[in-house]
Image (cartoon, rainbow, N blue to C red):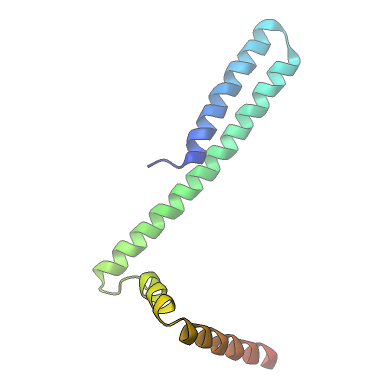
Length: 107
C-alpha cells in the first residue's frame, strides 16, 4: 500500500502543474508561482512518503528474516511482559538506567 504522503504529494504536483499552466495561459505570474510552489511541495511529500515506504518494507523484510531464522521479534513478548508484570518491568528499566548511568560516569 502506498503511503498517504505519496498520494498527497502526487495530488499536489498535479494541482501545481494545472495552476502553473493556467498562470502561463492567463499571464498571471502569481498563479504560476503558486503552481510551482505546489509542485515542489508535492515532490517533497512524495519523497517523504517514499522514504516511509522504504523503511516499512525494510522492517517487514527484517521481521521475515528473523522469523525464518527462528529468532522472531521481541516486541510482542516485551509488551506482554510489561502488561502482565508492570512492577518488575519498571524495576528492570530502572536497573538498566542505573547501569548505563554508572558506565557513562566512568567514561
